[in-house]
Image: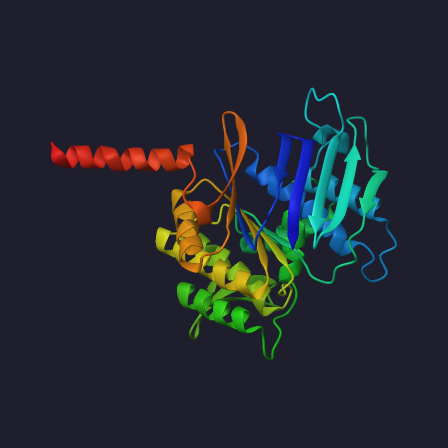
Amino acid sequence: MLNTIQLKNFGPLTKIEWANLSQINLVIGSNGSGKTFLLKALYSAMRTLEEYKRGDDPRTDGEILAEKLYWTFQPEKIGDLVTKGADTSLACTITFDQRQFSFSFGKDTTRQIFTVENHVPPRKANSVFLPAKEVLSLHHLILKSREQDKLFGFDDTYLDLARSLRQPLQKGKNYAEFAQSRQILEDMIGGRVEYDESSGRWQFKKRNQKFPIGITAEGTKKIAILDTLLGNRYLDTNSIIFIDEPESALHPVAISQLLEIVAILAQSGLQFFLASHSYFVIKKLYLIAQAQNCSIPILTVNGMGWEYADLKDGMPKNSIISESINLYKQEVELALQ
């Protein structure tokens, strides 16, 4: 599990020191505040640790990291990730299972990172990044664009996810929490999504009927992605899942159900980092923290910078929460007129 995060001069993230992380962690803020950027930075670090010394891969951790940052953020050179106008280098330090992984580089860095310190043993588990947009209908385009054409456009979060979905479903007994979550997910969408080898396309299967993925609801496809990754065993109980805007394309009831599944999976050992600007997400996770008496650290951005809190201790002050309360007050005032 990721225990602590320290970032300095990493794009819009001038300084973050987030400690005491838990199984579920939430980042909230307005559009453009750096939520997705933070999740991608953490994902790049974790995938570096997971690809390092895996199989016959001869690359050093510094080589893997440089390539991961380049294809995840897609700058002209990775030195462009250094905060504009910063006087010092970009620096990142994470502790994973109490072991440290750190790196730094300056604005003139092109495609190589030499300052890497890694004390984390090679990992067998996989992290995954679930973007706000679904990928099933774009699956073949993502793979062609990156694997054949080698073009910018779809970053590594999309490519890694598309590749992970190619793994066939596994039969046999699954983790109890995974099996329970898959059943809830399939009940939510009334079926399951499957890959048709003959056509090379995904399709939605509901009882004995099959529908093209292109006419399937966005929310259905998004939920089906998590179901697939649980079913094909790409994820295990040591995985870390980064979810950008879990509320995207989902009805509030579905948001609540999805976060309940997140809580179930977290109990099995998975760690989650979620980025959101939805009051429904914040409120549901607050209720989960209260009901289970568990820590859900929350990192929130305001005009003065980043603030740290824990939903176990209550709802934090934030513009998203304040606006929701203001709307409720306006409704009450109208009702009393």
